[in-house]
Image (cartoon, rainbow, N blue to C red; front, side, top):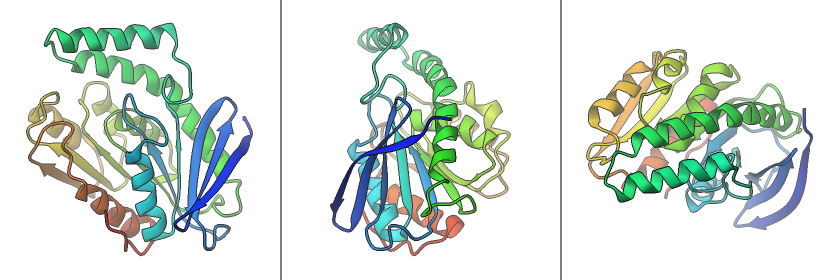
Length: 255
């Protein structure tokens, strides 16, 4: 297993931000400044397609979890994203996505195929990350772990959670059921799922089909009006309360 190496550290507004590398995979770990070495739950996050580990959606969600619940939060750049180089395959798939978009063709077939390819590499990386983080005194091997990922973060997160028993609660959303529905059937931990009722890319039937596939006894569907990129910010507050219920925490943060 590759070793975890911290490469930079900063402190701002009560949050310690530590950049790291796990082999050649870059990531970031956010922790509470007060009691940064105290045991606390961990939430792994997955970013959306075309984004990166420190995208405002990632840092904003991390802030809510750290300041509101006292959790540790970690995310890595997905293959071909952020500080990781793109392969020829990445470039070809991105070009095909832009071509389909310009031609007014459905983006789903390209995104589903490409995200499934990225997940094949990213899932083992997240397992290795969890192994490494649990060696840290402030996280440990016996603390609760959650996962939070929307869009591409769902494409990576569903196969990860389906095969990783250490993750005991998850927030997903906004993805097609192709490829993922069969893996979702293996997930039994509590799940919160977000979808947009007027999503121009993912139909209502597709969103409902993926939600329905989860085998979890406790699962909640959060549906809001609006298009694909209009997921309300208050859903982040809901996710924080969800993790506080299932991992432990105060959930006092607001967006």
